[in-house]
Length: 274
Figure 1 (spheres, rainbow, N blue to C red):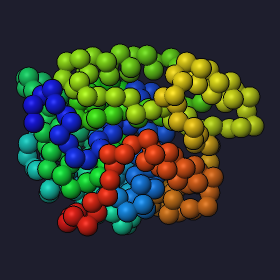
Figure 2: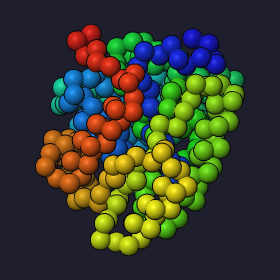
Figure 3: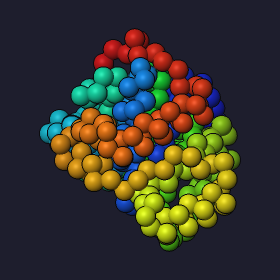
């Protein structure tokens, strides 16, 4: 695949990104993936955050994470050997470990380092309907690599006073990557997270974001919900931990909205052999 053409990926590849931490990137990756897999689609979560929270939240023990994203980016493993099963039928994860934080330095002299993830994921893109890449909370090489590999970027945005601050930097990064190496790249949408209808600030932030970004903002909002916070400690998505909680119901609604927006995300689970 050429550096400028990402459209040949059969899978819908989505980078879940925001350089601000604590906005719900990993929670969104895990639970959106679970809800999509429940519809019969084959889904892969790529954990590209050195903290490895998506790996933890999907039940992958630290000692069972190698080879993973670190080895994949360094060319020490191929994608087939890095994918793990999860407890969710149709949902798989490519795990991360803390060593991933050193990739920037280790690949410093590689002029094609930002393309490594895209090229490494090509075989997986033939086997999955949706690939969600959980990015770290920064605009470093890992996040840039994820956006280069993706067809779209999904942005979780916390309902707080400074929600829109910093978003412009991410959007500028997306635009630079679109111009330089991924002309098919689009913004999938913005998801408002940690929403509290009892809080006037949440409503004000929602109004401001929708006025500024219009149709990019998903109709579904993700509420503050203790079940979403508790589930990772049990190594399972909230949709399994408590599928009736407000957070789980919100992610089911988000998945339905995502699939309505995105007709590329067909179903090929029968072809997945991991």
